[in-house]
Image 1 (spheres, rainbow, N blue to C red):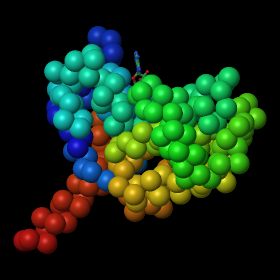
Image 2 (image 1 turned 90 degrees about the horizontal axis):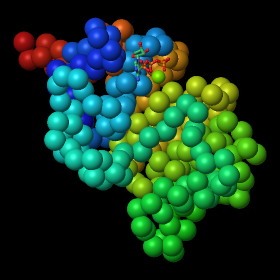
Image 3 (image 1 turned 120 degrees about the vertical axis):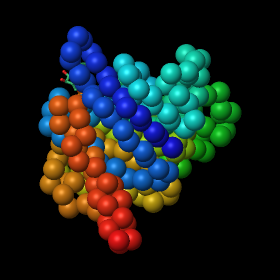
Length: 232
Ligand SMILES: Nc1ncnc2c1ncn2[C@@H]1O[C@H](COP(=O)(O)OP(=O)(O)OP(=O)(O)O)[C@@H](O)[C@H]1O
Ligand SMILES: [Mg+2]
């Protein structure tokens, strides 16, 4: 579903954002992308929603190739991908309902369908009672749940989350993780960048660790090795 081949991202001369990345991500996986500040987590996610293109190599997402995708096809790709950010990026002058509805209005969906889908998605993130609230009146955790609803309302099959718990308290962190797990259980691939190692250590999910732009660990490789060893 996502394939990254021999990919480098070079921002300035000799300044690598990412180096020699080879990754394959299958349908429905849950993946943590970890590593210290500046190691390339955001850069890797940006490649996946084609907000950034490789300097060398190829990124293939949902059948779209980074080397040949046309500018007008990018919105089609983005419809299949939900993205959430550490700072939520909500429209401050619109209430929770309208923030979520906006993601569907731009697709030209009929009004009645928009209303039904937005109400259902707000219920899924346990925020039906806050539908009329402006972001300013919501807690960090609630704002992040509005942004998750906005990403989910288009029923994406990949959800990219860039440090989604970076600006919320420990209780909301748990809630957001539980939501991401539910979303994954319903079939959506979730790829989450985080530097909260404690959170990653306890989890059974695949972990991709980056250091200075390079993958230094991918736990799915262990899995492959185990299968290989079993066959010996
Ligand atoms: N647009 C850009 N122009 C130049 N350099 C950039 C750009 N974006 C990122 N970089 C550099 O690329 C490297 C990786 O940045 P990236 O934002 O992907 O790190 P990160 O792992 O997400 O860090 P953090 O945990 O702080 O969010 C850093 O050294 C950064 O300074
Ligand atoms: Mg980042």
